[in-house]
Every structure is written in C-alpha cells, then in structure tokens.
Amino acid sequence: MTMVRIALPNKGRLNQSAIRLMNKIGFPVPDSSNRTLLAEFGKGRYQVLLARAQDIPEFVEMGAADLGITGLDIVMETGRKVEMVMDLDFGRCRLVVAVPDDSDIKDLQGVKDGCTVATCFPNLTKAYFSKMGKNVQIAEVSGATEVAPQVGLADIITDLTETGSTLKLNHLKEIGVVLESRAVLIVNGKSMLEKKERIEEVTGAVESVMNASNKRYLMANVPKASLPNLKTLLPGVAGPTVMNIIGRDDVVAIHAVTNEDEVNGVITMLKSIGATGILVIPIERMVM
Image (cartoon, rainbow, N blue to C red; front, side, top):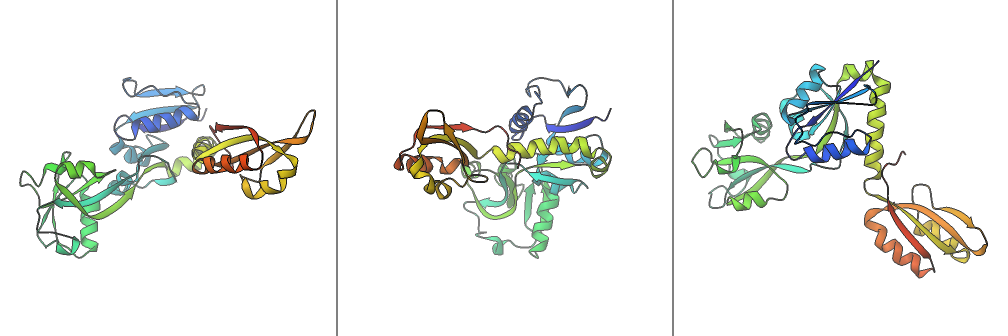
C-alpha cells in the first residue's frame, strides 16, 4: 500500500492553522499539546508527522516526508530542494529590516558597511544586503532578535513581524522588507513521481479548502420578474442556479456562490429586488 507522509509544524504560529486545515480535509490530527509525533489516517494510506517548522524542508527534501506545511521564509532560508505546490491562506508575515528609534540609520541607504545585523535568517539577510551592495556583519541568533540592539549585539536586526507591534514595543522602526512570507505546501519531487495519485488526492483536497475559504453559499427566493437582474448581481462560479418552487409560479429559488467580503452588499441588493428567505452558509470545500 502506498503511504503518504505529511509533515506539520508541531508548535508556533503555523501549528494551529495547519492542524485546522488537516481537519477540514478529513485528517483529525491531535492537538499540539498531544505528544504523539505520528498519526495515521485513511487505513494507513496517510500519516501525519509533527515536527519543528524549521526542519520540515529538510524532511521533505530527504524523503522523510512526502509533503509538508511550513513558512516560505523557512523554505527560502534553508535553500532545500523541494517543490512548492501552493500558497496557503494563513501565516502571512514579513521579514523586515529594523533599527532602534533613536538610530542614526533612517533608511536602507543609511546602512554603512561593517554594520552588524542580528537575525535568525542569516542566509536571507546576507543575500538581501549583498544585493543592495552593502557589506554587513551577520550576528546569528536563535530568538529574541528584537533585544539585540539594546544589549549592544547589533546595530540592525531582521525579524519576522505580522503587525509591527512587537517592533514598536521594543522601540524599533521598520526601514525595509526582505521577504513577504506565508504558509506554503511543499512536496518531495521524487515522491511526486512515485506517489502521484495519492499525493494529488491530498493536494486536491487542500486546494478545495483554499478555494472555499473566502466564499459563501447564498440561497434566496426571488420574484421571477427580477431574474434578468440576477446574472449581474450574482455571477457566482458559473452564474446563479435557478429552481422552481412547488406551488409557486411567481417566485423561484436561487443558489449562488459569492465572495465573503461581498455578502452584505449582495444581501442588500437582493432585498431591493424583492428577495426573501435569504440564507448565507459557509462552504467547507469547493472543487473547481
């Protein structure tokens, strides 16, 4: 039997979202507080491995896992030879360049050769400054990068941020962006050839969840006289579906898929043409 192993982060900012994604495709992965490192699903056809996000690109490259979810920042930093299948809709953050609020360095042009940069991402940071023609010294740290300038370890830092609030709390200001990151699904190239059908089952399921994540299923009863307005009002995936209602000649039932951020406006427009019984339902998965 062909078994596909999927590596997920066992903790950190991607952990819970990755587990929720697996749950949605039918893999009830144990909570991160559970010490189980391996869990099997689908009568042994699939196995989930919980590992450090930093190790997942290596695991996938070496074939210890066929698929993995980790951050784009980690994939780019490690330089491991893996294939990126798709971007996921969580884990968005930026790897930024920051300096103390009172620093003489006001922008990237003000970075002088010989400046020390503290970072957990030495490869990305070195490549970034080299591309700018800046010769900086890299001080590699394993955490708490934001305190490096306060203790005299570095003049500059590069660090991940989602909102910038941690930088502000530590009296740092952003002066550049090294990388826009997000969670990605990666695959081992050899596995993709040898286990193509099984892997495509998983990637297809993940894609269907991604397709549905910002969509809503909408149903309503609409006067037949208003039908000409619907194609423009509810384009959906392939236009709204119109169905007769038993015992009613003047009203039809319409079903459509719409973007989540457009739902309120669509409801208002539907009401304006006489629609009633409007229902909005989340979509778990959508296969395009």
